[in-house]
Length: 387
Ligand code: ATP
Ligand code: MG
Ligand code: MG
Image (cartoon, rainbow, N blue to C red):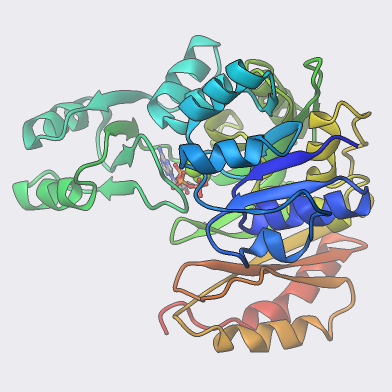
């Protein structure tokens, strides 16, 4: 079996490594720290070793590349230039392609790419950070105005919602996003957020997972409902849009396509992740093949596994830290153990922090009503987010 090197060792890498272990796929993880979440679940057979270093460090990436046959990522904020160089020098496979990661890791370029391919995205404009420029964009797009960092964004860190145009408000926005390359996006008055995970094979075929509803709290994914239910059935349309979007990128693997659903039933793409996605955790228990296994199958050129649901209804609840102390989450974890169909996943993070994803719980059920009634005691046991 080919050896796989993963840039990044957080929870996505951990679930990828867990999947790899079931298939005897040798995996080496590049992440800072000897006990990063992904390193805890797979112990490479020597001479293969995990690498202690950053996914932005040229020497660490080279150290990883020297040991494996294929490189892949569990995070998009990697050093793409080094990946390109290593690929050129050694011929190592990199999935998805560095070009894809480069486009996606700059949200402005990503939006230009999607728009150029005829996909619907919110209106957007580049933004040089001056009060006058912000007013100019706001005059075109209206308020609220979404100001975003082009790079290194996650969990909404990098986004600022501007609600008024006085000097103090604009200055506060520019201060919050100081020293980051910015662009502005028109506000999308969505009725729901949704997502589709899409697997892309080496030969470029794409296979969508079901459309799911994602519910965000404080910009962080809080709940995922699978499948999506709405007054209008937009599932197939949304799956086609997500597949079309992923078709425009090179390289194999899974992609998470985040969507805004508007009242008229039309769908905009918010952003795309070139890796397994939080909205696809539910696939471990609820689909024929999980997004993690399919990512491995795709990059190893194995047959892609069936992506459909094997249960009528599933819900994923993220366990988000409320402070430096993980103890407030213990009650919801204990409650989950008493609920049929609930599966607890903890990520082995050494330090809890407010807003940090510490684990998740997936519930499977025979229908939506049962799934929601199983969710209720978990929500009741959640710590309040302002503690
Ligand atoms: P992720 O953790 O998904 O990578 P991120 O930091 O890249 O998050 P976005 O996905 O750009 O951030 O935005 C986070 C959330 O902010 C979205 O899920 C949505 O709730 C809201 N949002 C983003 N852009 C817009 C917009 N143009 N109009 C309205 N809401 C928006
Ligand atoms: Mg993002
Ligand atoms: Mg997002």
